Amino acid sequence: MTVLYRLADAARNLYRKRHSTIEQEHGRRGEDLAHRYLRRKGLTVVSRNFHQRSGRGELDIVAWDRQTLVFVEVKTRARTDFGGPGRAVGMDKEKDLRRAAGEYLRRTSATAEQARFDLVNIVLTNPPEIEWIKDAFPFGRTL
Image 1 (cartoon, helix red, strand yellow):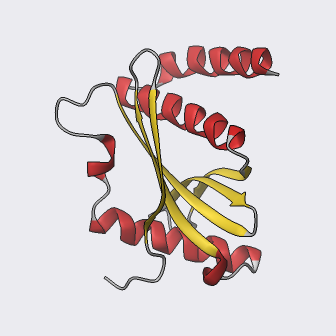
Image 2: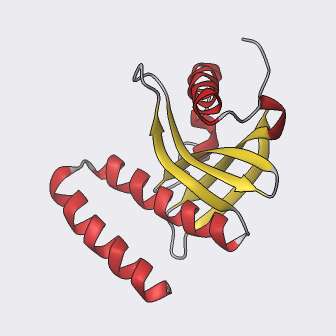
């Protein structure tokens, strides 16, 4: 199965190189790595790149961790010269993620009590460094 994932990634990456900036390529590669990492850790991925109808928010990965619905934000950097990837998640980003998660919950009839936000930080070294932060910020915090 790993060979199939690598072939699919290679085909996607070839297309992306022609149609994306280097930052977009890094982001997509990070999301692919996070997707596989979380699956290896036992999560069931149910959605990738879920867009809110209003267009403001996007959920990189939505997955089930047993009975908990997990909204995963993936942050990828080529290097850590200016700090780790997670520094890019500020209050505005949290607000957008909460809105998108709220819409996802309304569409699926899940509840906020069974949901959490995780953060996956990826540094594209060789091999990539992956850090998974569970419950990165609370679901119901008001801004």
